[in-house]
Image 1 (cartoon, rainbow, N blue to C red):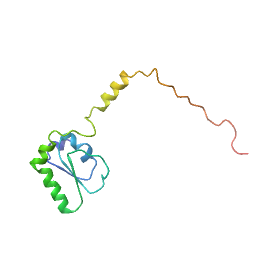
Image 2: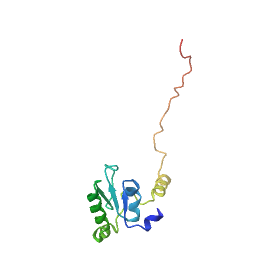
Image 3: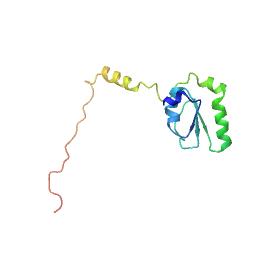
Image 4: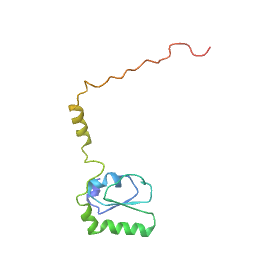
Length: 114
């Protein structure tokens, strides 16, 4: 992660380019269909695995226009504060009115077989 401060673009087909890299507001060139169907934000440029497609995507990622576009991009995977938000919700939720679920002991108490 510390290297992300030093790079201009991340190139590959790893989920980290889609999930972690956007927090650094760096472009990701996502090559091929390994991450197909995975939601991603505006910092990700997906392309095929042909060399010209990859070159075109890298040029787009390095362009001033694209850098300006993602300068204030927000990750679709949250802001990194999920744990504190969950704790606050649990701390302020009144659980007294919830229905208690009943469970039945179904352990076998007889002999198996004949």
